[in-house]
Length: 156
Ligand SMILES: Nc1ncnc2c1ncn2[C@@H]1O[C@H](COP(=O)(O)OP(=O)(O)OP(=O)(O)O)[C@@H](O)[C@H]1O
Ligand SMILES: [Mg+2]
Image (cartoon, rainbow, N blue to C red):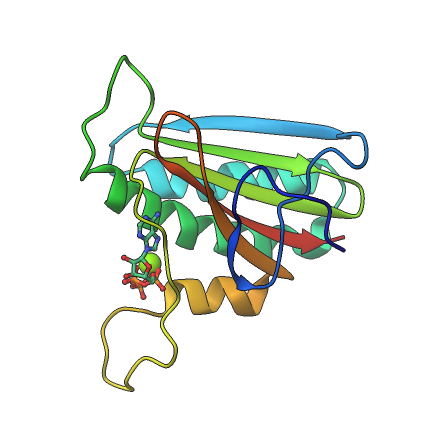
């Protein structure tokens, strides 16, 4: 289902973010600061929220997807100076009834690109392939004022 995108979505697996076509049922937002526990905090938050929403069947999947996208965002956010007290990484989970959407903002304007096929001995380049395998689709779009959102949709 393609529901229209705020900007140009660039996807690993053709996908627009879920926006506007149906009411948002509920959402949660978490600001993440550059601390060693930022990724575990995001993982735990995602697992708890998705479980509270009653989607226990996708809670672990959501946790893993959040882990990969937030790890990337934290890495790339470090390359951008934090301005005006804006948190460097922001996580939003939205329940659109048809699916849970994970969105992660960081201030870097560089867009992610999944590796085609990492070499067997490559030490990096698997995170977004994992996101692609675990989610129904994923993508990224630039945001006004700089930075971008990387998102993934997991159908419920
Ligand atoms: N938020 C982001 N901003 C900018 N570039 C990104 C972002 N997320 C991923 N990328 C880039 O997209 C590419 C693929 O990311 P991916 O997560 O698959 O691999 P990785 O982070 O390099 O390694 P791994 O996740 O296996 O430790 C990498 O070059 C990565 O730097
Ligand atoms: Mg990665």
